[in-house]
Amino acid sequence: MESRPTVRKAFTGDHVQQYDQKSMQANWLDPDIVFGLAYRYVDKGESILDVGIGTGLSSILFHQSGLEVHGLDFSSEMLEVCAEKSFAASLKEHDISIAPYPLETCSVNHAVCTGLTHLFSNLEIIFSEVNRVMKKDGIFAFVVADADAGETQNFASSCQKNRSSKIKFHCHSQSDLVQLFETCGFEQLNSLEYKSSSIGRQKRTYRAYVVQKS
Image (tube, rainbow, N blue to C red; front, side, top):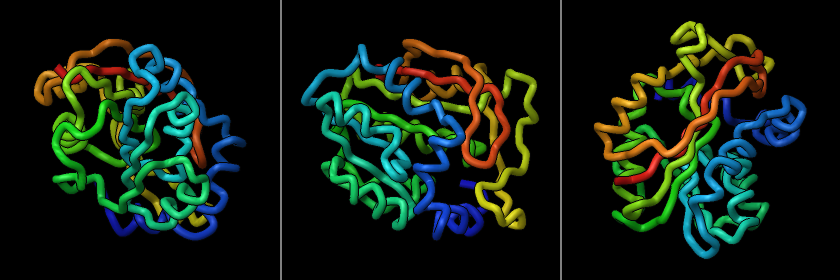
């Protein structure tokens, strides 16, 4: 993860408390799109790991469909907000950029990740650890900012009103992701390109993927 102290600062205080409301106001579509793409591949009673669960917006839809949710996040404040919703079976504070993740090998059926990949220039740690903790044939549903849409690969962005707290925003190309899938043991099942905006950011092109552990 780039500039850890700056990133951590961005996910504290009022921003955390207002995160859900701001996401709704920004019409953040990622959780709905990922759920729609992934739903056909999951079953009631299975488990799903939310990588960077935050306040739980990405995985609560899976919970409502009968899946058992487990979450990881580096922000204790975000985890506190998520815990108040009382839907996750377990929540653990952990820096996603550090392996190993605090889960046993082959301990969950599936994984989901939204609102996180733009913090990483290299996604290999995430994919390697998701592959390790996920059972065979499990699916990983996630979103990236699409570098093939003409965006600058890396640029500064801010989550808060304090414009001095800038973080790098990383886009990822389809060709790089295809190579990552091969390296980390995944097969692509589906993808969808769409335009969306999120907190403090202009509308741009994103791509949601569903890949399967081979």
